[in-house]
Image (cartoon, rainbow, N blue to C red; front, side, top):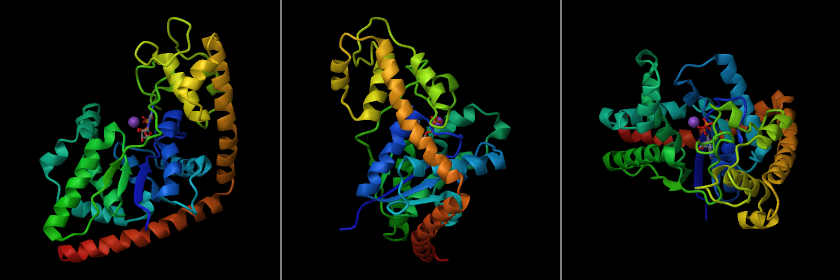
Length: 328
Ligand code: ADP
Ligand code: NA
């Protein structure tokens, strides 16, 4: 039987991915390429909704692709590409915009949050319609599954509604995608404030995969821990230590219970030291691989061109049917 298809994307909005991106999302991409027909894209179209610098975007798009490859996305197994290289996304997006209610789009809480933080003049129509483009990203590949975190649930619901709406108005055309709730992913918290999630917008508490590993080791050493001395997984009362245990467990594959037992009678300093070493051992070869891809721009281009070619074959097939159904 054909493998179920998965679609996921990541925005090229930072130079480096961080540990939260990896353990919360990208690690699952690597796993799913074994069980699914995986389509993974660097979503540069989504990275221009709030204003951007062209050179920075170009660099970050390449850096994102290089990091995905270095993390283990295999272009022989998965289709890895840059969203803007496949114009069918925006072509389908227009059709979907015309099926989306203005009020329906206005109810997207992420738009409300993001636009509330901007001056009215800087809130673009693109930011408003971005969930519709996201729907097109998914539907153009007839994806069966989409890995989603909490913040993306509402957008996937919109996608499902649009697929069903199109199907009932114009005839069975789209697969209605289901949310894939990853078993293995973890929410990673800020090292300085373990009550908020690790994010690129808070530099002090984030481990960036491309920063000097010594810096990462230092950040872990100075991570906020909790009162008491026992190394126990207790997110309620010991969010700092629990976060370190989650990171440690995710990077090594050792269970939390196993780690608790191993650290019985030891202190926070021991845990931080050994976790620092673990992170160092993870990022050092990773950074070497990223450098390898960046040092060979022709090869990186080739990988992305091939990915886009394959993506376009699938996307063009869907668009052709869509255009036919709607009377073009
Ligand atoms: P950031 O929050 O740093 O801006 P993004 O919003 O670009 O990162 O997130 C990219 C992906 O990484 C998303 O799938 C998101 O759910 C995941 N992610 C981001 N931060 C974390 C975190 N701290 N823990 C787990 N997953 C995360
Ligand atoms: Na974010």
